[in-house]
Length: 113
Length: 140
Image (cartoon, rainbow over all chains, first blue to last red; front, top):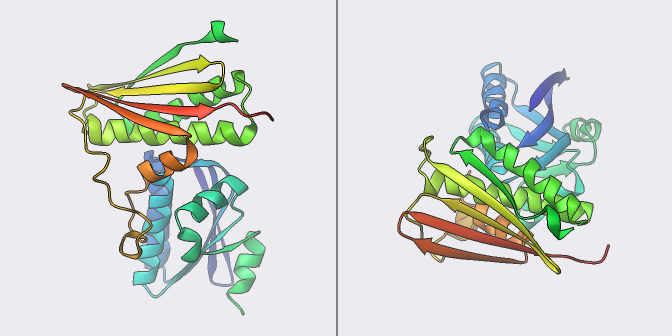
């Protein structure tokens, strides 16, 4: 999995590409979020439009990011989840926890509302 | 094409190998002509079973193997996942949907597995646990 980072108006967008299935790369996104918190950036969007498969370990990595951000008074939003990943969020009731958006642009814009 | 099956894959208990299992299942499911959505379900479900076998069965002992067997029946796919562990009580798993568990970073694997497959079963023997996953074939 690869992570591309973009900072827009003090919102970090992390574009993930690949699979999130528990390998060490799944935890890289959490390390990246902790590093952003260290840089005082606590509004984060994780874009999943290029993630093919995610399992419970991948969900765990997303939850770890959320826990760290919440602890720093930050906010995590999700964008671009495929129908399959959206379904995973739904059956695990995590849709009740995350704000999800079709695109990263919309997720970033929502921080202004 | 039943002649292409059974297929077998052996993995050492290294969590980065889980992805290999997903592609193995994807190929098999495509060869059995499952829909794209079912192919994804099958691949993800197998990663849950293999992760469980590596972490909870083989206790992350990299010398221990996880063996995956995929078989085709006229109406369904069967995947067996064997580890070298002593087993667990599948009924003694916390409900990940309870409010107190919702924010946990782990504990959703078996729940997801059950959601994605049509049937799962377990077989416990001395130093060997097998989980059996079944997915029914549906008309596309």
